Length: 253
Image 1 (cartoon, helix red, strand yellow):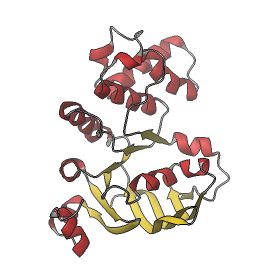
Image 2 (cartoon, one colour):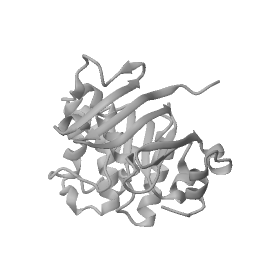
Image 3 (cartoon, helix red, strand yellow):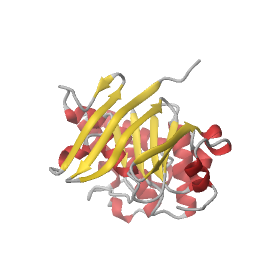
């Protein structure tokens, strides 16, 4: 059975002042897969994520045109609450940014946004989401400690747990392992491989080895344009475009 597309982007252009950052982007994001957005630094990968969750609205000099369909709804031209759209998309940044509270309340914050008030339910859900990112056993006796005392890798998993607690359908991950050591990076990758059963994951990276390890679908960008997109096996084994072949062979990065 064919995989459904969770997101479909059509004729997307992004301008910052007079500079065009994204140029006529047309892509699909398959549901319950890990889609890796690949390409050299400065090619528009992060900007694409910002368009998807409407963070571009926060910048007065940014202008977006085109269409982004989420479950068939054009989220660039909608009367829906933008906050609700953003809550469907958990964002994991390059560096972890835990809230300046303890470990427990980092996750509880996400649950409160979703309307959870009962303490017993809160406790159970905090444990659930910490287990979901393989962090519970490491922190279950430290829940009242400040989150900043955790290692960077643990902080990133805590931020992922906080994002999952809001109840998203999509995880947008912007170079989520770039500040982490190899062991912590591997744990994040393993988390994503497990989480794709329940979530659609869009991950930006410029690390080819990482893309080969975890991608189900690949979008290759260069200078604001989509050069090629395909399921991972086809992309890596049978790239269609010369620029893709050059990138995969290490001729530029």
